[in-house]
Image (tube, rainbow, N blue to C red; front, top):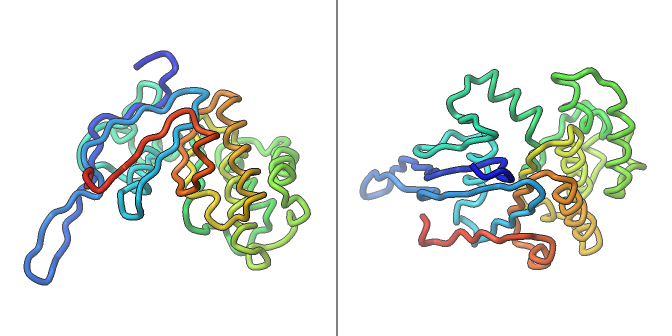
Length: 226
C-alpha cells in the first residue's frame, strides 16, 4: 500500500443468486474490481444505472460483505473484523451519504447530524461543528425542524452534514446531489472537494456531469463489468 493510499480494494466481487422464470442462476452485481482511495483525492465513480456503483460503494464502506476480494483500510482487512470492530471503524473513520433518506423521524435536524458523533465520543462541541456544517450547506435555519418538515433536497444536505460531522478519513457519497438544484449542487460538490483538500479520501458516485471538474480521477463502471 502506497503512503497516500488510505483504502485499497483488490478483486472485490459481489455475486447474487436469482430465480428466473426458466432457471435459477448466479449473477455478478459487481465483477472483480480493484479500487484505491487516496488521501486528499476525490474519486468520481460513474456508470449507467444498474452498473453496480452503489454495490461497490457499499463494499468499500464496510456495509456489504464481498463474495470475493479484500478491502484494506490502513492495513486492516475490514471483513476480517468482527461486527463490533467494523462498526467502530465505520463510525470513527468513515462518513457515508446514502442514496436514500435515512433520518430518525423523532430527532431534529441538529440532533440527527450530531448522532454519529455521540455513539463513541464525548459530545464536546459537536453541536457547534454541526451548526457550522448546516450553515455551509445552506440549511442552518432548519436545525430545530424535524425530517418530516424538510424537502428531499434539504434532507439530502442534512445527510451530508451528518456524514461529515465526525471529520471522517474517508467519505462515501452516493448520488449526494440527486435532489438538488444547480446552485446547491455546486455547494455540495465544493464541500466534498474541500473535504478532500483537507486530507480525506472521497468517493463520489454521481450522474452529475459537472462533478468531473471537482474530481481528481474518474472510475467508470460499465455493463461489461457485470
